[in-house]
Image (tube, rainbow, N blue to C red; front, side, top):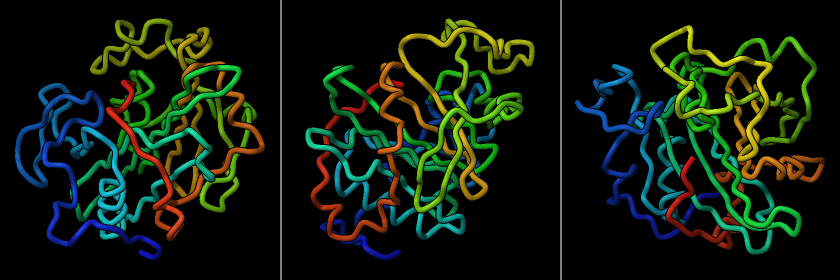
Length: 249
């Protein structure tokens, strides 16, 4: 993995010590290769530090790079003045990372405080849908009917041109999403809630999710937004600010 350095030493743990379920953030039992969620059964573990830090980001990059999948960790680049990394996460064991999560927070003149969460995942993981508050977390992907329509926008991500579709959200994600009931899937024509906007697309065979809060800040995702793989940023990564605890999604 090129361009990653800093104070993290090889003796430090590669991932945070306490794993969770990627689909509900609940605790998981069992050891490596046999994690189990009381709600969702066997799942790959979500590793998420309590507070984002430079060392945590370097550990995340090293874990992903040592995995056979080598899933990228995307950051909006450049990170704007006053913006900071507020959330980090990986899904999978240290040698089999299948998803990464990166959040940044800041402020704009129009929207005030803004949170942006980027999830890159192998199909079937379910992290992006779960963070969006969708029942599709249990099936591991976005609603397939989205892709029958033209995409709403596109961005550059790691040098790729990625088309994105807006994901309609159920009006009450807390009560309408019953993960183990296929009949609970939301109406794709329902109005999007006011608290966030969610977009999803495909990048190099993986799902790319962007979650933006408040929903009006979706205008951030215009021609000026680009995502860069943090492992390729080199010394510039040291200049990125970090803060916490992470926002609740």
